[in-house]
Length: 85
Image (tube, rainbow, N blue to C red; front, side, top):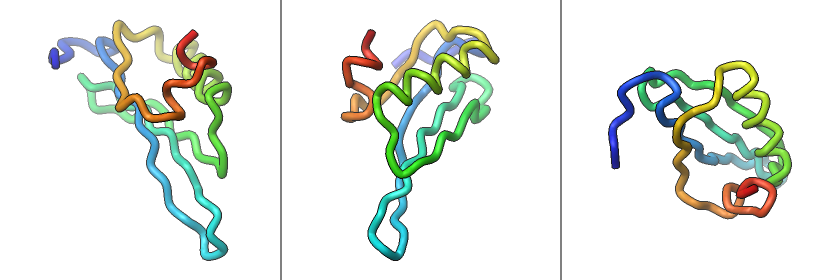
């Protein structure tokens, strides 16, 4: 994997989750700039659809600029048709 040499060269996306006592899950979409190691966004909810991920990425790009590359582990939430468009 290539190393990013400047801010916005590459962003990494991943989901983490925890569970409430009643069994519901809390999902967090983490977006990190790989060069600066800055956490650009933490989006948390009990459900994060592909459409929601797209909205979050659009908002981050409006604020920070567009990255050259985005990498993820290709999990279900990051490979939906809404995200891939």
